[in-house]
Image (cartoon, rainbow, N blue to C red; front, side, top):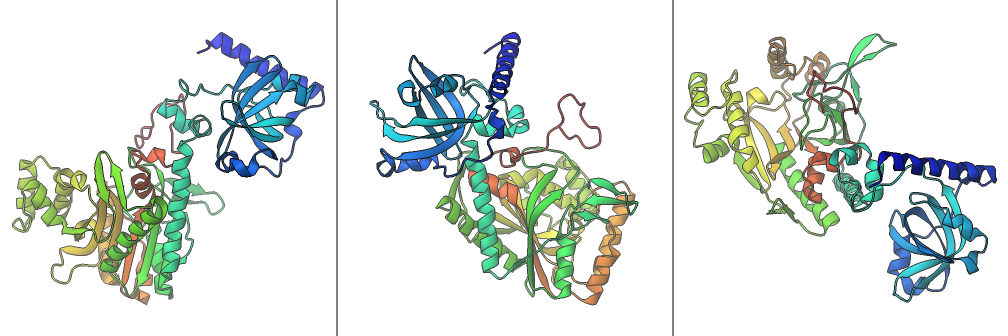
Length: 497
């Protein structure tokens, strides 16, 4: 690798080359288009059709070699790479200009397709055109951009030097498109709801806070789209969904980024059983369409996404993996005692302690797709209580490879019950829980107008994409993950890094 002095000299040479071009009236940045290009992959995949024909190709120079009156360049476009052959006896005086091209420059080539004596499909240059002069050095292919932190910060370099990274994001786009296609085919209407909210509602999370200057009010970036979508059910839409960004001012790890993509849907006259069917059949259909199969491999585990998925209650799952049966532990004091015995964090209610046991003993064991059902009411402020056990709710979360990918309810449509649960959340908030939900009187008013029985579902799109593309960090499925600015100290108000 070049030292800093050599690097500075090389960068200066690049700038001098650009100034020379400008002085000659050949400023490459004045080129405005280069129409009629053929993707390099098309040429290589169908050589017989292109052999001997003139084509136009454009891309970035990734390698240069050669000497004398012949030189070679590897050009990379969106579809791949192809070799360019420059001969002085073909392009004449332009050959001297081509020799001054640098790795990283963006060029256009008009030329003839042929195959070299070594059998490599190539294009012989007839007319070269420099369209952008690169003023920086590209990392070397084999020694360069391996640092994960730098790859996330400078994704543009990552995509250039590690073009296989593009495949993940192409698949991401296809997965989201297939989710839309699936839901549209089921009669759901895609809608848009506000990102700026005066109340942070619909989830238990710490919001980002901003200020609206004109109205002179504090506002929040949305943490969920749930309450607005349910207002639409009240208003008479039967099936609605939204795919969009959510924002939560919390810590970061392999499955959490402060901004992330979710899909939320609501269906009138449905329940959480319908939501389970939508979840498992949609994931199966998307996997089949995008991957061509429903079996994926992660961390050495073969995971079968085909419906139906396993269903088990939270209390039964806790019993299976911890040996503690909360069907036998029905009062709070006994729950506290067993929590202390098992070194589980003590919370303010039996239901919250059950959830802590689940987090501690169960979640990371759920490798195959599993629906965990029958959530305690204390951690489900928007879900309908079970008819046969009002301490539990008609709610599920779906887990794959030890991570939650979906959350769904038979939605609470009892306005009085909802108001009281909001008040319980407000009490938690006033006691110092900054993730507890806020009171939303307008939403209570909407429920008082009347919301039909409704099933609601939220799916973490990024986590689903991680599973379908075999990635282990959410940062590997986000083109531009949140990063701490270089040189700044670690934030004290959320641990973001």
